[in-house]
Each structure stands twice: as C-alpha cells, then as structure tokens.
Amino acid sequence: MNEKPHAKKAVALRYDPDRDPAPVVLGKGVNLLADKIVELAKEHNIPIYEDSDLVEVLSRLDLSAEIPPSTYVVVAEILAFVYRLNGKYK
Image (cartoon, rainbow, N blue to C red; front, side, top):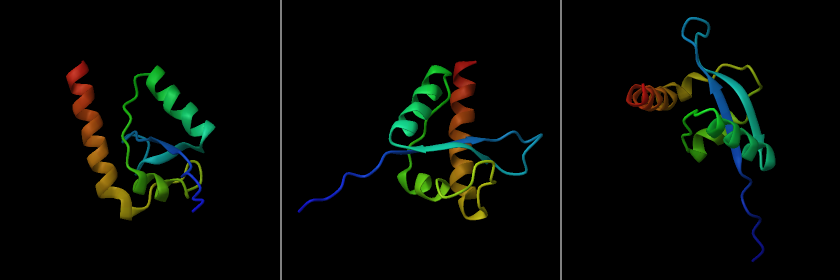
C-alpha cells in the first residue's frame, strides 16, 4: 500500500481579552510553513500545544477569524495550560 504521509500542520492563535472576544487565528501553515511557525514560537518562548484534531479544525479558518464556539472548551483548556506555564516561569 502506498499511503501518503500526513502533512504537518500548525496554527498560531492570539488571545487578548481586552481586544478579542474570542481567540483568533494569527497564522497557519502546512509542512515547511508549519515548521517555521513552530520554530518562531520556540525562539520567542511561546508555549506549543499539540492536538492534531484541533489543528485540523482551526486550519480551515481564515486568518484573523475567531475560533468557532465548538472549540471554546478545548482552547480554554490550552489557554489554562499556557497561563500555568507562564505562572511557573515568572
């Protein structure tokens, strides 16, 4: 069987509660662009959270689009994870 390898995908979100009613898609990419997004996140000490199902949903959104309500709970869990990390490193 000749199965194609899955493309690597990455989505960057921004959430500023003073500015955004919900998290928005700041960037997204496949393969080399996904690698660059991850590389930039690491360079700027931005936490990385891997969830292939969520990336699949979010990668279909346009840039600057708010995340859909169906993803609020999962993204809230990720934001809680990020806030805990930030609290540990302050």
